[in-house]
Amino acid sequence: MKKKILFASNTAWSLFNFRRNLMQHLAQKYEIVCLAPKDDFTEKLPYQFIDLKMNNQSTNPFQDITLFFRLLLLFKNLKPDLILSYTIKLNIYGSLCAHILKIPIIITVAGLGTTFRKKGMLAFIIRKLYQVALPFADYIFFQNKDDQKLISNLLKLNNKKTGLVAGSGVNTDWFVPQSMNSDEKFRFLFLGRLLKEKGIVEYVEAAQKILSQEKNVEFQVLGFADVENPTAISQQEIEEWEKEKIIHYLGSTDDVRIFIAKADCIVLPSYYGEGIPRSLLEAASMEKPIITTDNVGCREVVIDGKNGLICRQKNVQDLQEKMKIMMNFTARKRHKMGKFSRKKMQKEFDEKNVIAEIEQVLEFQLKNNNDHKILTERK
Image (tube, rainbow, N blue to C red; front, side, top):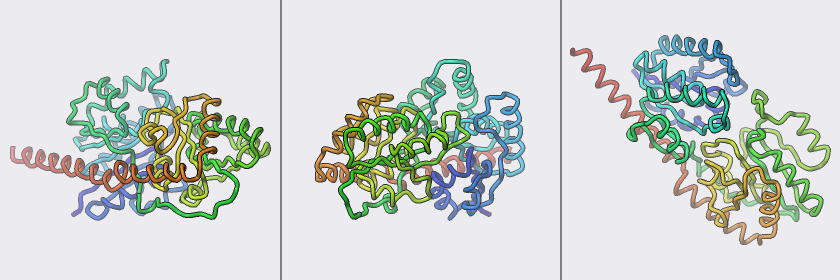
């Protein structure tokens, strides 16, 4: 009988977009079960799916206590051999529940968001919950060195319990360079969730300034409107930007390749607590130069002047200047940057390497747990 691996996340969307290839690989040897709130992507996951009732944005302690007991009951009934957990609440409450039930759990800290580093009661509570719960995880993957250092110091973690992976990786065989028919218009593409912390407002303001001076340029936006997030951009704001002819909104898509291919430069002026933005990895793998910020998770992808340009966070003027510099580069210069991007992706961020690292830790944890069970039974 195949061992059962439970994937737990706060959206089916994130499981489909970020864990799909890992699940597909592991499904060759293990039974895969998905646990997340139902959404439009639930039907796209070809595995047993358990609908998890939870409010991602709630700070109500009673709702969180309910979530804890709900997870405890689900884990007990599902009896997984191992849990792979993602996102803050599931990492916290999942680690506690798995510890109580003696189920090995591997969590991934895919960025700390913006709240963690802020001051205030909510940030304090989250840090305290991390301190209480995360040491119970059997293994913790981080996606950048900044988060690994911060959490390891805060929790005084054993180095043997943590590891670093290159984000969720990028499929360099899928995201390949595509030659497109070029025209005279220079296209910037903002690629990411439409959250204020992703720098979408700064992007639009910089675009407006450039458009007052340059006419032969287009500013596109492609991304998922995360309406449940309190910092999400509203549909009304998007419509107003389009009405003012500042941006061209492309909506959201399951396949971003055609849009990346048509762009001359990808822009993500993020000040969000990133893990490593998948959008930057995909763009780089397709040989596109990038403009992003000197922000945690973003600076891992771009070497300033080599495969893109780094701008200051929340600085419209600096972003505008970097965009104009990119526009003034020769096509040959941008092509050279793109070549450097792809080589960096193949060397450091290939999804196959990320999957191999996760699988190695997973198999170690399964073996250790099985050995522990055998010893316990003998006693």
